[in-house]
Length: 166
Image (cartoon, rainbow, N blue to C red):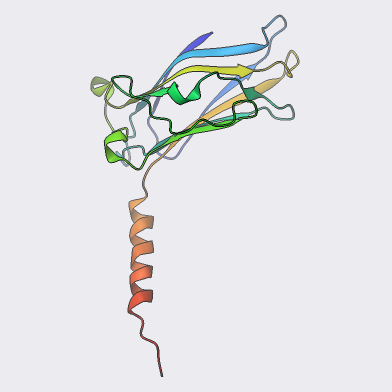
């Protein structure tokens, strides 16, 4: 069982945790609580979504979670994850929203819990791993790309204004 506290300081770089199975370890890892803070320094952007992925290398590793729909929570306990992925085979889960009131804002340590996500009850089945083998838990947010969006809009505008030649 683990409780993890992590924060993101650099934009567009995922956090990767490496787990190596030791002799005598159990077949299931449970992350009972994970506090994830948005402390992006460069762009100071809000998060519209957040992803968790497992990479088992040559051996498959799977999530086994009884209720992922209530796993992602914001301040006050409101559910952030829409829909439930196939928990029997899921190696990637994500929270995403189009609702700006559900974005995770940029902030400092003093702003917590307003700038945090809470992930509860993540269970990882590692029974296929032998002692000494490793897997990776990768997490990353996606932030809006203002520059790319502006460029796309300019291109669409230029295309729309182009008049057909006779």
